[in-house]
Image (cartoon, rainbow, N blue to C red; front, top):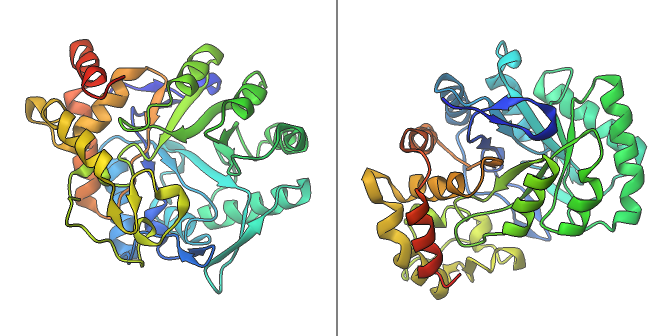
Length: 326
C-alpha cells in the first residue's frame, strides 16, 4: 500500500484513514442528536481491527465523539498495536459523560492539559501523534495561547504534532508556519471542493485531512428522493450545518442531481460510488488524506478496497468539473 506523508511530521500514513465519529454512539448537541444512530461496540472494535489488518495505520477521533466513548473503544481496539498506529484526536468541546451532552467549549491552557490527560487514559496510550484543535471558528487572536500550549506539549513528548480542524483559511494560514503544526482537517468531498484549503496545505507542507469525504454517507448512493432520516440520526436531527446535504431529514434536490451527473464516472472500472468518491479525492492532491466514517466491518472493507483502484485519472477529473459546472 503506497503511503502518504502526514505533513511536516514526516509520519508515513496509509492513503486513507478511518474516522471514528459514528462509533462513539449517540450523544447530543444543542438539544439534538449528534450521532449516527445505534451502534454495536463489539462490531466497532472489530471494524477498527479489520482496518489495521488491511493496512490502514491512520485513525482519527475526538474526545467529544460519544463524549469519550469513541476514544474508549479505540483504546481497546488498538491495545498491543499502538506502535503501528498514527493516532489523531481533538479537543475543545466540553461534554457531560453521564448525560451524553455537549455543553460548550473551552481551550484555556489548564483545560487543554486536562483534556489531553483524559484522552490519553481513554486511548490507553502515553502520547498522541496528532492533537487537533476542534473549534474551527475561534478568532486567531484568541488562538495564540492554544498553540503556545500545544508547543509545550510537543516538547514534553505527550503529543508529537498538532493541527487545527477548521474550514476557514485565516486560521489555517495563521498556524501553517509553526514547526509543530502538520495538518489541517477540513470538509472535503466531490460536492464540497475547498481547493483553496487544499492548495494552502500543499504550499505549507501540511496534510489535508479530509473529513466527510463521503458527504455524511450521501455519496454511498443509499439516499434518494423518498428518503426520510429519523431525528435519532445527526443527518435528520435538524442541525443547520448539515443543510448543504440534508434538510428536514431529506437529501436536498440539488445534491441528488449532482450525484446523478457524476455517477457513471465514479463507478467506472468496477468501483462502488463510495470508492469513486475516495478516488476523486486522491486524484486532487498527494497531500489529501480522506477519513471516511464507518459503523461496521463491511463499510471499512469496502472503503479500503478503493485503494486498489487508485485515483481517478486526469481526464475523469476534468470531466467531473465540467459536469458540475466548475
